[in-house]
Length: 102
Image (cartoon, rainbow, N blue to C red):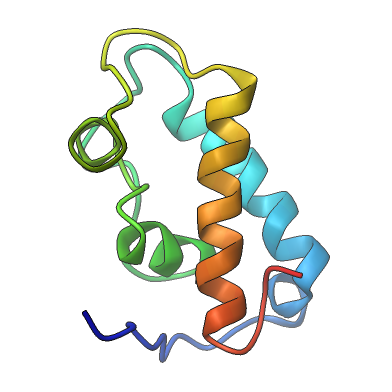
């Protein structure tokens, strides 16, 4: 599988590596960690932030993808370790793209 290259413009805030990972932690906590996330399956836009692109590229965009690709059970809140694993996957993808996610 070839890596997906983001052509999204990056704001100066989200282009900073530490900010991208902080945003990823926040997005994961608010949008993925609950047992039944609001709008699950549609909560992660395809554009607007490098982390969103990374989430789709790493199948960490919704609970359905987490269940299918990472065997994370649906219907229960993500543990701190599971959240950290998701953020690490996002960070690895961002670094591989030559940018965010120090």
